[in-house]
Length: 142
Image (tube, rainbow, N blue to C red; front, side, top):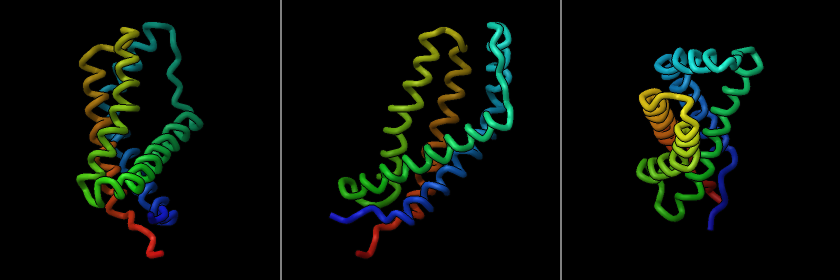
């Protein structure tokens, strides 16, 4: 059994994180206004301070690192390559993003179309980020 190549995991995770953040930022224009309107209607403050933006960006990088760690582990079961990266991305999206969005749906706070858009953007960012990060990841030679 081979060990995870820590350097390649971190590099792949950073690549995945950059893509997650770029897609999230670009995609958020599709639903950010609706989120703001819902928050305002419920007397909730949506603050986009420097700290909250930094936390959001950090979360994108953490998502990338987690995805590539799972990809590195899954390679031994499913083999290296895009098919394994795709599987990892979809499973992580289901276990994280989709369940998160279903929770919002159960609360009835956000509209169905907004949640579908949010879900589609997050699925694209997870798949694209994991595929790109997986392309960087290689096993250790030892």
